[in-house]
Amino acid sequence: MEKQDNNSQAKLPMKDILALERTRIAYERTMMAWARTATSFITFGFAIYKFFEIETKGVDIGPRIIGTREFAIVLIAIGLVTLLVGKIEHGRDLRALAKYYPGMPVSGTRLIAAMTAVFGAVLLVVVMLRG
View 1 (cartoon, one colour):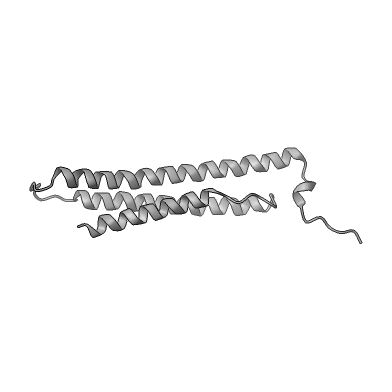
View 2 (cartoon, helix red, strand yellow; view 1 turned 120 degrees about the horizontal axis):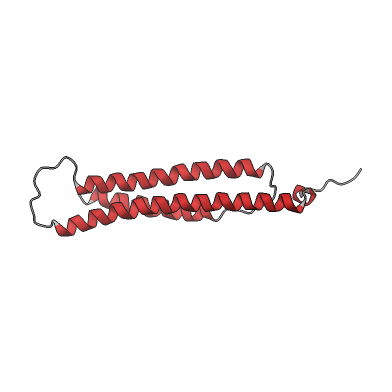
């Protein structure tokens, strides 16, 4: 009985291996785009909050439908949801690719997404608690 090779990738032609690698890298770039978009929402929301907190200190602005604090919370929350949606799609794409690409390298973008999520969550808590 012949011993079966666990490395199915070695059985694939080089052009197929390279195509799978290009696809994986495209998924990684897409996840990084999701992370950049989420970071933009989060930092823009916090920047608006801090800018108007400094500019309106001691000034009565009067009645408003939505304040800058609420607007900042919404933007930060949109950033966190954006990151969550990107992470879900990225995971789904990688699971689908793993069926054809055994031994696929581990994604480094997961760490970036996790760090961005922690960053966003901390800023969201800061804005919410500083009423």
